[in-house]
Length: 266
Length: 266
Image 1 (cartoon, chains in turn blue, cyan):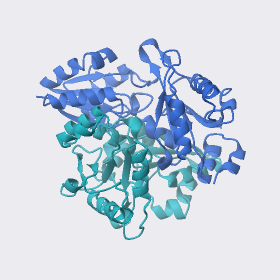
Image 2 (image 1 turned 90 degrees about the horizontal axis):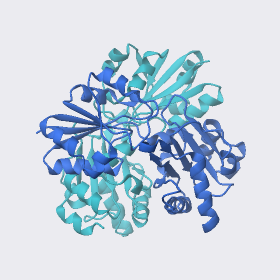
Image 3 (image 1 turned 45 degrees about the vertical axis):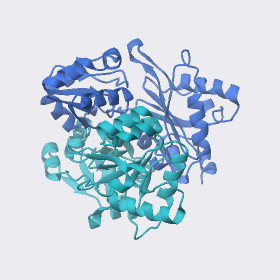
Image 4 (image 1 turned 90 degrees about the vertical axis):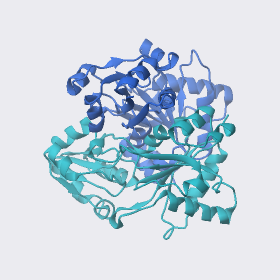
């Protein structure tokens, strides 16, 4: 009986993987990769294959979710099998299901962690890590008119904690929700709900391409963020709650926030 | 004018660094490292120096906090300066202060992310990432009888979100708060407060040595966790809120939780 090693690719490109992760690939009997849970725009599969000396086999959402990762499980019965996933593994519930399925079949599993958007946004924004509440994913508007993201932002704000909004993607269709689109969606819900959680005057932080050499990080009221160019995807948004004065300083110096932000911090 | 690149070392040992992080060290003019914000028990400085061909200079808490990172800032005025930090950089507020200080002096800063305990515990436990509320650090009892951790657990629980408890450390004294000690501290506060947030029958998940080859992950009621051997530090605790049935399955299969957990999940 083999094993499955879930290896995190980290952020942005193939150089986001850890040294330990690369070693695991080199010593694997089979290596699979999924690319649909997060966008890594700079990723070169060829470069990763050259560095590791191993052939990488792509697995689709269909193979992992509808077919319960049968291919990966089958391979793991016969030898050491690595599944490469963007970011830190097992943040997406689909991987957890596969891991449980493996253990249920007596296949051992291990994790080699990678950098995750969940902690990267903390460093990029300079906000306090212990002030983040639960995160939420903003879906494409056309298919899912969910008010959940709006509700999470409103509840977190009331509780005095920041909200990280992940933006949905459809890798198969090369569609990635942008900061502008997500803000428009939230503003439409605001127009209906009128709780004041996401208005033109609400402060938010847009982050483009976290983990790349040139991430775009901009803090401003939504009115002005809508005119800001965040470049290519992936995008992320943080809705901060009431700021500590050191957080305001961080947003001013590290995210180009307006200086008047100081007056609202405590 | 040079720059400061904050490079995350990831978890456990020097192989937690990303390929991009190692490249940044190789091309740096000066490389500093701090080890006091998180314990990386397997870290070999010599191995990191051999791999990178660079001499690493340790910076103490005193140098970074009391002297505002003067040594690092001075070095960054003259060339590319890397500051290596455990985990993902800038989760600790002391690094944010240094980064603001640098930008204030016209020194550019960049971040190379690393795996963080904040996301690692999600994968290790199998809990849903979007159900984590704000995290909190449990301090040593002798110096700080703070009830904050207890309050955060109680509030998060009421709001239906999980709480990650980081456990304090004093690198200079080689003291690392253990799961047992932290639980005892919380039980003492419970005895005083009687809110029922942390009792002998409360479910919690203890995690030892996240990011190592042999992390110890155990979910059980506190009564039984107190008898469980989590091995050497670092330790972490999660207090889960009401579980989704898939989370209960994950805890049973991946963290050895009692099977009766299924009855309490929804």
